[in-house]
Length: 507
Image 1 (cartoon, rainbow, N blue to C red):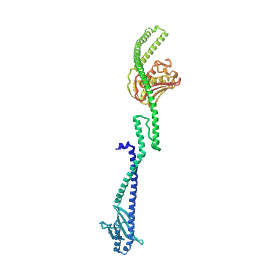
Image 2 (cartoon, rainbow, N blue to C red):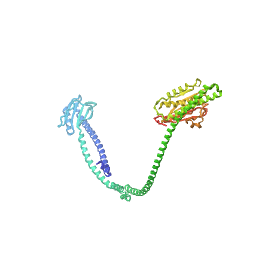
Image 3 (cartoon, rainbow, N blue to C red):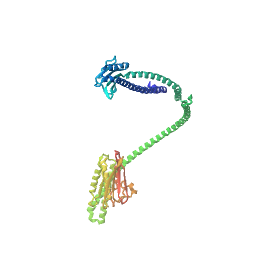
Image 4 (cartoon, rainbow, N blue to C red):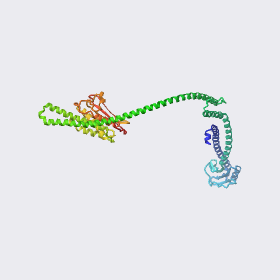
């Protein structure tokens, strides 16, 4: 039932008319009933007030001369008012002086009079009225009358029901007329649209029967059908062209997939070759580093034996050259050790954990600075660093390399100063080490992180040029970045980042 109403404008209009009529009748009927019941109560109190006033004045003399017979005759006159069920006159002392009750009732009258006033008591209207003459209270009149509010209400409801039924019938007739005049043309247009949707025949047209808004609607529907017909023809033509284009694009996509497959195959081959080359390079570096140790040990050993066995027959220049041979052989041993460390780094697995970077940087610096001569101890300004996640041993190596560089390149200052601090954003922590040392030319910054790349001579600042390459490789394996900023003679700042979340991989 509800579904049929929801899908029919005819039923909706009928319900709208009937609902509006019923709502108007209910509002009007309720207002009239409330007004009539209020007027009925006020009229009842007014009539009782008048009757009590008349009875009081007519009985004033009887009260004054203590004549209950006359007062009783006056009270019995209320028989002419059948709605009054009981009445009584009290003297000034509050005793019953005269009474009246309707024959069909056996009522108990109040023993004492109440104060002036009127009120509703159940289905009765009750009033107490003082009898006053010459500013002297002679007594009190009591009256009780029927208050047939429910009977009156039921009577009104009956009338309201009859009027409502008649009004709804009239409203239904009016609704039927409105449907024939207004709804039928709209239903015809709706039927036309259904036929158009089912048959896709845009040549159908709505019949105009009136010159009002419904007629304008029919004209608009006809114009819309004509425009849709034109656009449908154009769309079909466009679809045919699109089908041809889609066929060509599918062919192009198939060719592109073939090329992508070929490219992926070549990339896989190149990747395999690169991995093999990297493994061969690592194996070669490891082998070369080990193979170089034997001749180096021989060079160092035989040079020492030459000094020990034949030192007395060698002049001072020969001693100096032998010292150069030994120092250079030892330096080459350090280079080999650094090369081995760099080679092993790519194969070592990361042991990730949460790190106190402040404590790690401080302990690393204390170990490095303790190795310096007393006159070269640098001042460290270490800020509170954020905690990070990473491999403790590898990140300790990062701090060691950066701090040792800062100590080395600021060692010629009268007051060496090293600052360690960090900033954080949503994605990463940015740590930096700043010194007031020699600095470098920023044009050659790209060479800093290459293996054996140096911007200063070994005679000026010792080193192998592998430390910063190790820093870059360790930080890159932790998912971070490394860069530097400097000017000659103004110190240098080295930065490295660690992600806030885990982003560890391998090089």
